[in-house]
Structure formats: structure tokens, C-alpha cells
Image 1 (cartoon, rainbow, N blue to C red):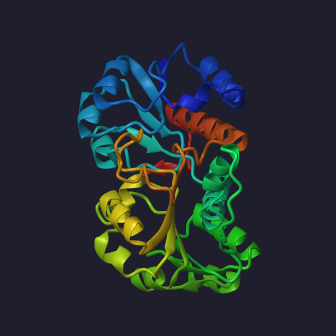
Image 2 (image 1 turned 120 degrees about the vertical axis):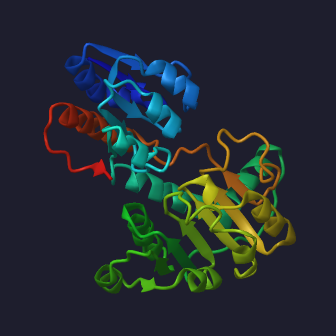
Image 3 (image 1 turned 180 degrees about the vertical axis):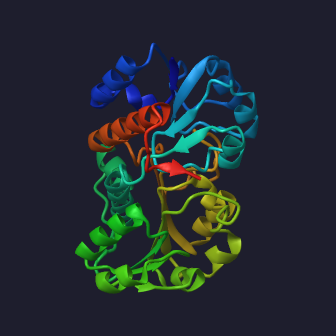
Length: 317
């Protein structure tokens, strides 16, 4: 049997056990030859004779699924998000899709908090200034006493909430499937989305990208924010209309953006690139030693469980 593995971090030392497990199980492993997320035609060209596919952030659309060989039985996502996989198309073709929920929750949550701190204290800007021989004086903001609105209270959102409370922040949350008992015990106020956005000093996005959430932060909602509010996005880039966000940043309506995800990746000509109140990281939220190892081990286990006909609790439908 042949398996395709495309996540660029799968070949890091932290995934040595996962690599050993899959390489022992199958006859041949094809690794990503491009060192980046794959385009549709590149995926199709690598799937010939493949029985299992451990997928990174590749766009596995309906065309890719339709062109996939009959041998392909499982797409094992290396990560929690499956918005880049056409699940209905896979189901129609009998291809099982799995993911690795919770494995990167702490890693992404810690980056979200790091971006909040970076914006509150202008850390990247101050770092650059000192390295240029300057010694600026600039007042920042304390997180303590500020209100954080979390959009999406899954595993990552809950970890962000715990860390925010440790900083003394007031935490509110919106989630269409919110666990009311959980938020009550954690002291989190459950609010409708627009009320949460209007009342937050910091907003952190933790929802999947789909037809309902695409550009959920657009011109109208940006206009309803508190003056100088900050938005953190470590989820998916399409949640924010980048053109509208750039306008809000230039006007001062939006105080800053902390981004780990973008409408087009890698980032090349985004209107946000040249703005000094934007902190940008290269979609690295899940890239800690611990998360990389956990994702790799679970992705391989999911793949083998499906191929062996064993129960897998992480099948996405």
C-alpha cells in the first residue's frame, strides 16, 4: 500500500515516532515535494495508487476528490480544521475523512494570547526600534480589566479563555452550540455575536471557515466595534475582510490586528502588510514541538485505524 503525506512539519524530528509507525505499516510513503501546501493539480498528480492521505492545509476540493483513484480510502487531516476538504464529495465517493481535534489547542491558544500582548505593548515595533538604535517611549495597554470576546468556544477558545482570566480579563463568548453549563461554571458571559463584538476590547476568532462565517468581520461589523478594539485571528483568514480591516486600521476605528491566518496564503499583496498596527505570523499556531508530535501521532493512528477497519472516533461527517 502507498500513502501520501503532505504536512510540511511531518518530517520534523518531533514526528519521528509517527513517521516510523506509518513507514512500518505501508509499503511506500510519498512525501510533499514542494515544502508548502499543495494546489489541486499537484495533489491529483501525487494520488496515483494511494490508499491513504495524511493531509496538511491543502485545498482538497470536489475536483480533487472526483479525480482521486478508487484506491483512496481515507484522508487523515493533520489538524482539527476540515474546511479545506470537500466532505460531501468525499462521502459520495466513499472516502473517510478524519481529523485531530484538541491536539493543537494549547499551542494555538498560547499564540492568540501572545498576539494580544504584542499588540497591547507594540512589542514588534519596539523591538525594531531598539535594534535601530532608538529608545522610544510609548504607553501600552494592560490586559487586566479589559473585555475579551471569544468567537467560537471549542477546545482552542476554552484554552484562550482560561489564559485570559489569569490576566484578569473579563471574558465573553459567542458560539451557536455553546455549553451554557460550562460558561456558567467558568464565569464566561454568553452573548449574541453582535453584542459581543460591540462590547469587547479584544476579540479572538476560533471558528471554521464556511459559507456562514466567510467575512463575518466585514465593513459593517468593524464599524460597530469599540474605537481602538483589537482583533486576533488564529483560525482562518477568510473570516476577516482584509480590505475593510485595512480601512478600519487606517481610520483608527480598529486599534490593531494580530493575524496567523490570511485570505490568501502565503501572504504577498495583502493591504495589511504595510500597516504597523498589524502583527503577522505565518500560520504557525499549531507549530510547537508538542502539538506537532500530537497531531502526527493521531493523524497516523486515524489513518491506520480506518485502513484496518477499526473504530475511529475522529471521523468527520
